[in-house]
Length: 255
Image (cartoon, rainbow, N blue to C red; front, top):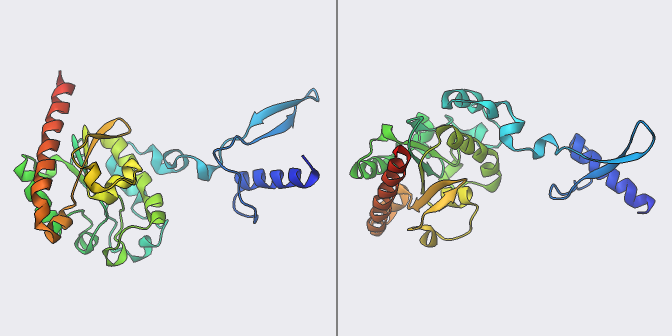
């Protein structure tokens, strides 16, 4: 390695360790970052750098990662200003329902009614969701309902990737605390971000998928059903299948 290459490598390592103060692209976190450290006896030894704080999982890198209850988590993250939505929201929409729910429903993001009330699925789509839940024998308070984003995107636009990247660790922590038996994604945005997939909703529906060991199913978002009533029949088939799987999973746990 020539002198210039050695200098560049040192700058890369310094950037990874101490932050974004240099105009040099940081080394890939997929590569092993190593350098020589003299031993007390004078010989060299290889050692690995720890990942920089920003590259560690959010649940390890931030205080809220140690939250043990949903209430504790909510109190620690409800003032979040990591993305621009923190500046435009009316209320932070954490989630609602049974903190030990066996069924977790995940939507896309709060709408105007949710932003005003601070609770997910309270507008027209939420009213339809309540009817769907009742039709398969669930009350709203039996399940837990939340979204990929905790703040409303202006104009109810689709969440930007940067917004998702900042917010989805909160959802992952919620799932870790609740430990549901089954996750039901309402719409493609929820599914593609939890599953890290680019498959279409058509291909995802009707399958039992998995999020970190938890069975997961996908159906239409209630707002989509309001726009296109023709989707209500396949959505009804989806939630019936989800109820059947849910009951099998719960029964299996009891045995």
